[in-house]
Image 1: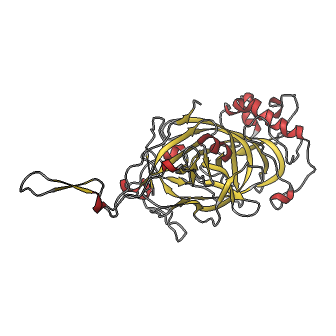
Image 2: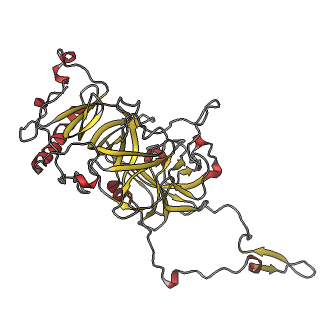
Length: 442
């Protein structure tokens, strides 16, 4: 199908009604993909009409049988699966069908005439063949299951010390996912793991304190591998995200992600054509580019939950047939290069195109600006000023903390230790500060 409409390529145009800013398109020198033809910039009104049209018809389109998602993004040339520098309202379907298939059910045919802008204008539309599911493993391994060997020196599917982003984690409900990054809680300054709600909680009845294992149970993690406990989460139309506070049982490197050689500075807003990368438990280090925004789709969870997500980021591989995510990559952080050095966090990976489309594969991510706001954390260190009365004097050695009680004439004195013995051992349970989720009804 080739819906009608004027093709154009707006640049640096703001999108209204989103709390966190703008999803502008880049100037050519800011990272436009090589080989994409440049066209004259179109007026701001055309960009706004695409957004307004999507918001007007989004739910109506999603109710059509076979439609899996809608978004705004680049047109895709079917013959060789290349992206054109033409903007369109894109309708994603399980399978493309010829127009005569709809002669007895014209109500299901995606006709641009039926999906005009609020002002009554035709907008450019495109149909994309793709189906989306969560990218996590739902069940622990069976005795005969073989674990695939990673392609790097550091085995991200095994116990890692110190903790870094891009390695295997899990919870009792979900046996494997990815530790996206280590972040600072803005409320109390504690160090936390950032990943998906369905990785760190996975249950609508999950409670603060749910353990996080590294590696995940699928990767042979054990009860002794608890490194963090669930602290806050956000599971609504825009986010599948959570943080778990470290227990102190393992060392950590904040800002570091395996296979990436710089640290995350802060988060930023995405734009079409932005080059991004991620490091995940299953596929390791992969590249892609943002080809769609305002992505909306119903995603089914293994627990039977169906969540409708809106305003998500759609990411395509830079090479045809290149897989950029697999089961177990949920929770990875998509980043882009910062202007001078370091990375800017763009999105939190939570789902993908499974089974893979003819193009190769797509990935889905929550906008990181929204995730950061909902969970109230920072990628940069937070320094808490301590008052003098809050400081604690060093304790004397354990040997000096005993007291002797004399039980009477001729009796030997009995020693009682006021503190535990010195030496190595497991860390005590941590007091959980704060808590509670931000779960909203679909």
